[in-house]
Amino acid sequence: MPTNKEKAKKELLEVWSTECHGNHREERIIKQFYKTYKSQKAIYWYTRESFLYRILNKGLREADLDILFGLRFFLVDLHNQLKEEHEKYLRLFVSSDPILHVYRGQAIAVEELNMIRENQGQLISFNNFLSISTNHNIAISFAKSVTLTEGLTRILFKFNIDTRLQGVKPYADISKLSAVSTEAEILVMMGSIFRIEDVNCDLSEQIWIAKLSMCSEDDYELKTLMIQMKSETEAGITSLGWLLYKQGDYEKGKEFFQQLLPEESLSDFDRANCCRGLGLIACQLKQYDEALMDYSNELLLTVRLGQQTEIGIVYAEIGSVYARKREFNLALDYETKALDILRPLKHPKLSSVYRVMADVFDEIHRFDLAIEYYKKALSIDRHHLEENHAMFGSTYLLMGITYAHMGNHSKALDYYMKVHSIYSKSLPPNHREIILLEQNIQQAKIDLQNQKLNQVCLTSDDPLCQRF
Image 1: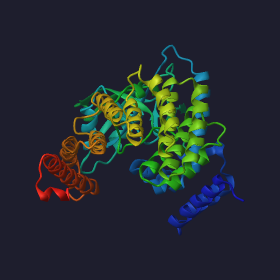
Image 2: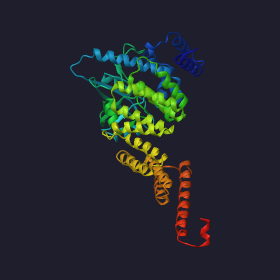
Image 3: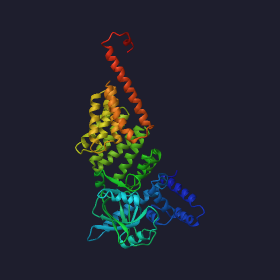
Image 4: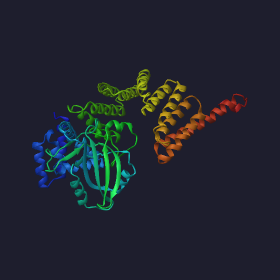
């Protein structure tokens, strides 16, 4: 029975053969790939001019999930080899200056340039692999040689990479592994994070200059402001799985994460990330016991890594699963564990913890506590989200439902109207959420009217009141 990797390789070859049928040069390359490819040659094949290089970069540039899923085994191999080369590169790196100065010249859409200019001082993540040079003149010559079409301009990226920095995506000199003979070429892993230090125009050279400094993953986690080239995605080797999850393609996302997990070179951090992805997918598929197993595996890894924040987040996810299974005592136990870790850190995940606890309190008819914890969630969200963020609408809706359960239909209506104010600014009028909300509003009005009539009838002998 073929392994997942063999299956993925076969799928890639089929697509490659179909797309390049009749192209004799590509057909020769396909045969060579089939006969000689091995994991240790991933960088060579990435740098070789062929359909594989073009289709991979197209998939990354456009976040085309079908393309990227077809290339999943190659992406894993490329990441693993680059990681190995990164470790070798740092061991052998000898320089009086620990800062690596590298350059990349290219064309850029004016729209993207403006986005970078407007976000100086913030963070940017590149979704694609970055091929950059240690030679300033080569990079600027390449930028000048690019033929510009409408909406494009030239830019030279000046990257500063502190080789002492921990917790970064892998990068390495790949000149000895490349299919193209070149001076020192540095390949940087997709999802690498940089701070935009400065952007200006060199009028004499007629080119934009952007100065960027590589940041660690720790910096990334501490910041809420980050822009991304082309599309939003999680950074690194697990990014495709997260893209598939966000698109609702759960089976493919599950297959991708499962294919990654057995990789020996996968870090515990990325392995934990895979387990979380599998847990979230299992929840979406209502496979709650499977989700608990995935989160338990993630918990073991995060404990091994000593990441207290992540341990708190895993506890929160486990509690959420138990809430869905209606095992409310266990749900509250795990959410309380999460609370103990995350509350001193004032972590944004606290709002989710409070919401799950509020949901549980509502289910067990502890309505006052439910309202109290929804308010705690709102308090956290106000520090991290914009005023009209959809999350406020979701919490207000839950509070309205709880007030309805309490028989306080006036309060319920007040909160439903708050939700309507938020949804009307972000959703089309015929959106399913607005339709359901309007049904809640109408029901609250009916319940409120009946409540008022009942109160009148308590002090009236009118025969008409007998119907209430």
